[in-house]
Image 1 (cartoon, one colour):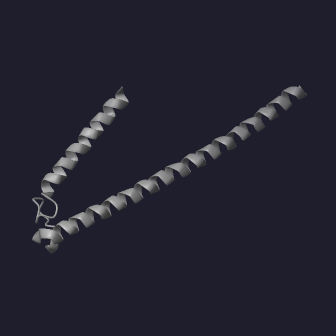
Image 2: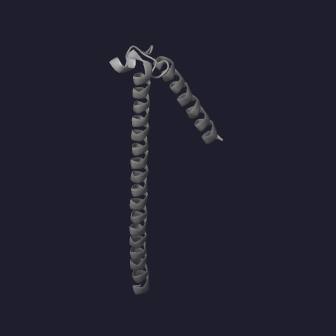
Image 3: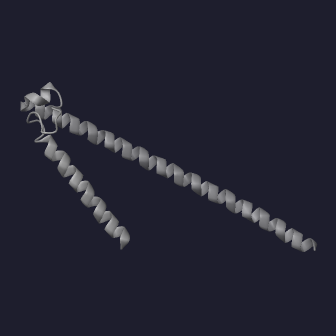
Amino acid sequence: MSRFLLKANLRACIASQIRMASDQLGELGKGAGKGGGGGGSVREAGGAFGRRQAAEEERYFKQKEKEQMEALRKHHSEEIDHHKKEIERLRKEICRHEGKIRRLKHDD
């Protein structure tokens, strides 16, 4: 239940952040936004070139985000593999020590 509430709160927080960011931007490619920075002379001018630049920027950042997510997935996969190998190594150590204990009990 608490996991569900945490996810819902996180989604609401992210959605509000996106809304605030989009309010400052104004409409992409339609000239300078309200956020203080215009985004360069092409975007400030607006028109077809401004819209095109805004679309290219969106594609660029989506591609970067996709690459970062893939790198993160790969990292976590490698971590999982490492931990599985470590678990197997520790299991072998446990078996080795249990064997020593059995031999000591047998010698008594």
